[in-house]
Image (cartoon, rainbow, N blue to C red; front, side):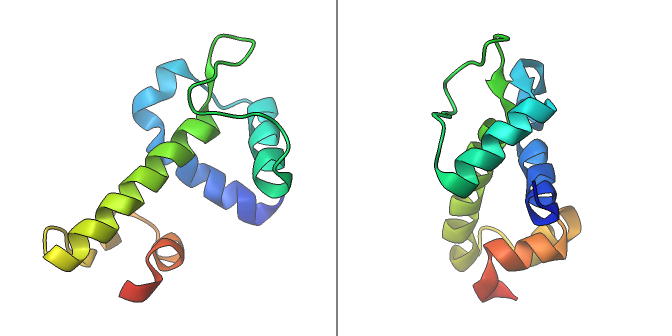
Length: 103
């Protein structure tokens, strides 16, 4: 796994924090997610439990991260959310990546 992916994986963990009690963030779960994202192989789904009865936490986090970013992109132009609110809560390297038109 690359260092770049590991950085993004930390953001996945952040967005799955409310679901930690049903999520697996093991190294095996990380490998499955990395392979799925980099090659398209595997059958990961946000609603599929792993053998241990838990969901892949990285997939859950990606799901909620994507949903949140989509809401931000709708709310920012309407003035319902301000970029300064996000700057205080999230790393700038990541905000620049997911909201490039705002920086």
